Image 1: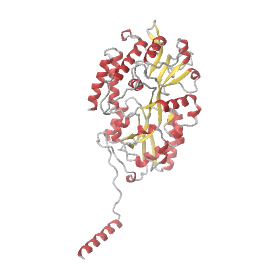
Image 2 (image 1 turned 180 degrees about the horizontal axis):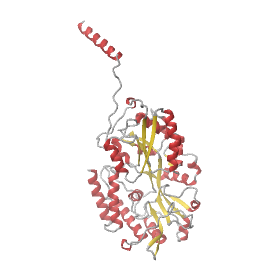
Image 3 (image 1 turned 30 degrees about the vertical axis):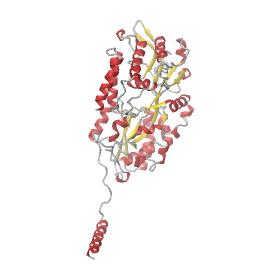
Length: 458
């Protein structure tokens, strides 16, 4: 009887405490910085409602003026109307120096509530990003089922960290009229030997200025022809794997890596000649390097361009009647595992774990990533929406985008999953820079990348 009396007293005390207003809500998740060792988890039910005068801060990188105007004039006013007392502030940054900027946000544990990341950055920043499954997962937002393969770029440790905006694969755009004029009648080259022959025949150097007046192929970067993303496109097209079978050890000591590096040097020399010649690069013009100068009627200088639609001419340009769109075909002659490839990049918006406005961030993302909004966002840039159901209207009405979407679906290879991508890009650019100046041989270059990348991963 004494035991039951004690239990009754405890129950009554508990009821009194509850009636007096003892808090029952779990505390909010503490900010997590880049130094964290575990991926942050955030429960959707723990976040307090937004207070009056809250500002949702969004950081975007290098978008068109049309994109920003649409967000400021359409999306943000609708969001503010649905969230009284909340303001939205968009800051525009640049891909130049992005790593330093983001490192500052995460080190301080303070910064924008939504940040613009690139394809490979889910592994780089994943531990410092909020788990958005409670807000954007299937149970919270059925629309998530409409996103295509690009959604994997917005995940870390199996959890959503944000939403992908677009798919921007790297294609090979070629001026068929300039090919014909240069005596090339077999279409886009389909192996390494053809590309080298193509570069020799269709690149032109003005002897008076010792500078290029026509460049057979501009692969991402016209001047060096040794961009690390171009290297990856070629590497993947001949069956190269970035890591060995353990999924961890770098694979730059592979035959495919050496062949890729040799190909980049061969293409550089076929275009510019030996490094000692010091041939000048194409002059900077207006618009795409494969377009025509409206003022003079002259070509901007490139016959082919290996890049995304960002660098191609605007879709309403007359020059499109003479432009083909293809994947990069690899080199099946030497590498049986070769396959046509378009290397797909997917920019996305992520929510840092330090954000105190994760529910608001999710609400803004849902509004900016509806079927109609994702279509409109990408229309301002001429790119392919990340949502499958958003690929209508301008996507199918444009012959160029329709072809690009088909090639991306058939030959797309993702760019995500690169460990320490910022360090790898720096390592590769340094080594490839010494390749084109012929300070290092292709064998030396891949050996250096392998050693430096292993050290960076440690």
